[in-house]
Image (cartoon, rainbow, N blue to C red; front, side, top):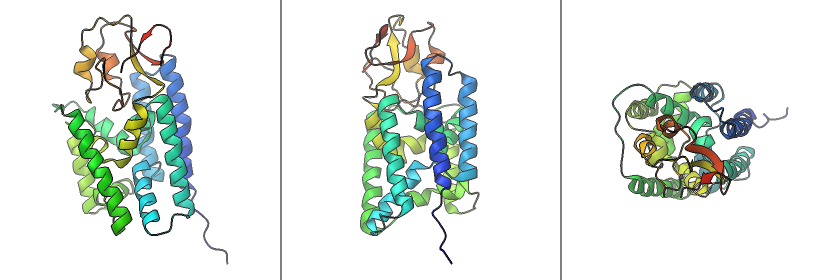
Length: 268
C-alpha cells in the first residue's frame, strides 16, 4: 500500500495569505482599506487559524530549524516552510508587513484583543524590545539546532488553534489577555520571524508616508502603539493597523505610497 502523501493543508493557508496580501496592497493603494475591511480580514484570518492551523510562519520557522538540527531538512513540509518564508520576506520587503498585520492568525488574534476597549499600556522601549526579540531569536535557533528543543512549543500556539487543552494553551491565553492592554506582545517580544520581517520592512518599497499636507501635529505619533509614526522612523515595526490614519486630523496627510512617488514626503 502506498504511504500517506504530504499534507497539503498548509498550502491553503499560504495561498490565502499571498492572495490577500495583493488584495490588501490594492485596497491600501486606492484608499479603500477601511476599518470594516480591517475587521473582516482579521476575523477571516483567525478562522483560518482554527480551520487549517495555517499559515503559521513562526511555527513553520521553528519546525524548519528543528528539521535542520535533526538532519530531516529535505522533508516536503520543511521545504515548503523554507519556500513560504522566502516568499513572505520578499513580499514584506516590497509592500510592508501586511502578513504580520492581518494574515498571520497569531498576530490577528492579538490585534482583535487590543481592539477591546480597555486601558492600554504603551511600551516606550522600542529599541530594547527589538534587542530582546533578537536574543529570543538566537535562543530559538540555538535550542533548535543544538538541542532539538522547540522553544515556541512552550507557548501553546498549536494547542490554542487546535483547541487542545494543555499548559501551553493556558500560556497562549495569558498572552492574549496581555494583548488586551499591551499591543502584540508575542509579535514584538517572542516571534522569531518578526526579527526577519522587521529587517525586510524597514526598507520596504511601499509604506505609510507623510505627504505635503502634514501639519506636524504629532497626532499619529501619539496614536501609534509601536512608536513607529515619527518622521524619522523606518516603519520596520509598522503593522499597518491604521491608528495613525484614524488619528490624523488632515485628510491625505498620511498615505500608503511608494518611495519617491509624487506628492509624498518620505519618512525614514
